[in-house]
Image (cartoon, rainbow, N blue to C red; front, side, top):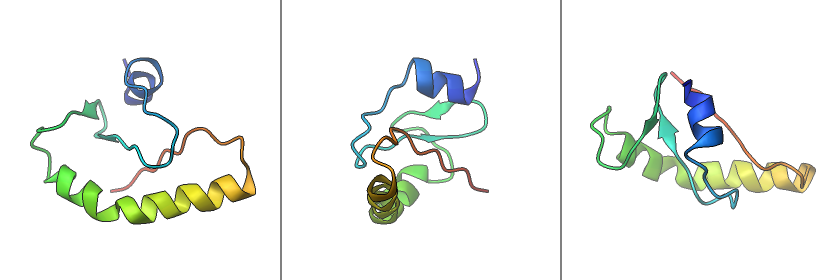
Length: 71
């Protein structure tokens, strides 16, 4: 199962703009996983992610998911 399929099919995240999941190329990262301190990184960028979500919802209220990839 691909990472995106895992999110879409098994790891649903509420589309509320305040709930987030992190992943790597092959899977969703669960709480407590040891992957480059991802929980601290995610926590530090949450306000920016929430802002992006809010701005996009103002443009198109039918958006129900935002996927951001980085390196």
